[in-house]
Image (tube, rainbow, N blue to C red; front, side, top):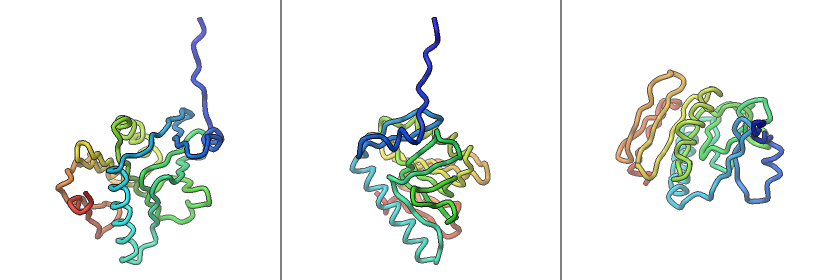
Length: 180
């Protein structure tokens, strides 16, 4: 009996989805994305605003892009992600379609149906792509897992009662009491 082959998808398949349909592509496998919850969007908006305000107040050149924003992590045609928040500090990675290469900092806000996706699949994908810092914000567990990938350190777990230091910015600490 022949083995079944998984269908390999490409970025063209993503762009051919019906309008309003969101999906990500990892190693040729398409993952459909459900609409985010209200709390997900609140956290997304507050974090994006806090980060962007800090960058502007300090004369920084990094750019903050909330989802949906296309990130093409490598040169192949089989990986396309839309992190909840992407911070890019190298302008030559940006084009009209999104970011080509690894953002400096990615924040994913988990949804009940995708936690293993963010904690395992995307963690490995982002580490392999040389993302400098990766945060996983879990509204249900009220936790933030911070990976400082530049220093290859063990992740640090915070709660929504904590102030979390941003590793890629010297002077930014985010107080999650003010976010939620």
